[in-house]
Length: 309
Image 1 (cartoon, rainbow, N blue to C red):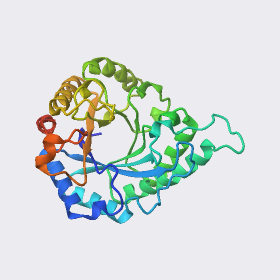
Image 2 (image 1 turned 90 degrees about the vertical axis):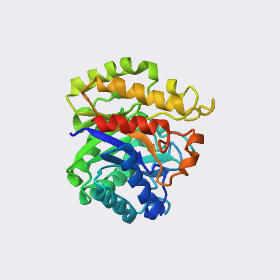
Image 3 (image 1 turned 180 degrees about the vertical axis):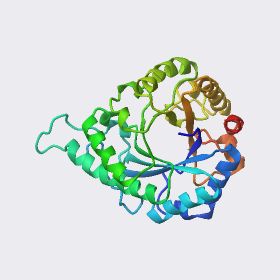
């Protein structure tokens, strides 16, 4: 696997959002302003509740295949390599990590087998699309913490995905979960969400390194980022933290993250979180307290570090 200087693009986009000139210009600016060489295209489908077994990936709000293919082609034209990342959200606002069912089937309760059947249709659809459009990598899941223990189902899903897609396959586990997955050997690349406090990077990297060594696989942070809020550098995974605006907190966190990771040659890249398909006005960047990078001091930190890789 080559080193990944990547940024996640277009999370929560809905049908039609990637067909606009402004979204294509946003991707061009991502490459130019961050000096990225990869883009992670995030496609989001939803299920109604954490106990629903149907992924509504054919809903009319989901990005159309036509516009996804168009954005992949645009990325390739810009010289970006594409990592395709179909994701699941829960419509009622529950975090996807809490999708869960009884360990053993109980009639007539919803079942893991039903959920994985629907999820498998969803992922294999995009596996075929990724193959057709020559995507560099496919992420087959993101932060589905309660599914991680379902080793048999994941191995079966990966086997079917490989029949549809010949590129690299990864699973994006959640923060602190890297050493709790027993089926890393089935994927090509280990990846995780690196929302670690600024003062804890060394210890967390020590822990993750043991997993990487044990499975002898490439590793990158498929998600890694921090919002522009006071104290977020010490709790970057808390998207609800509301202590006030701080562009410096985000920039300081990014600098500390890059410094910690550059001493670990087994960290082979990043999928920074994130870049919007529809950008706010540049003059509004100084008031944006989200994870977005555009126009903020953290963007300059990213560019400087990406240029060195």
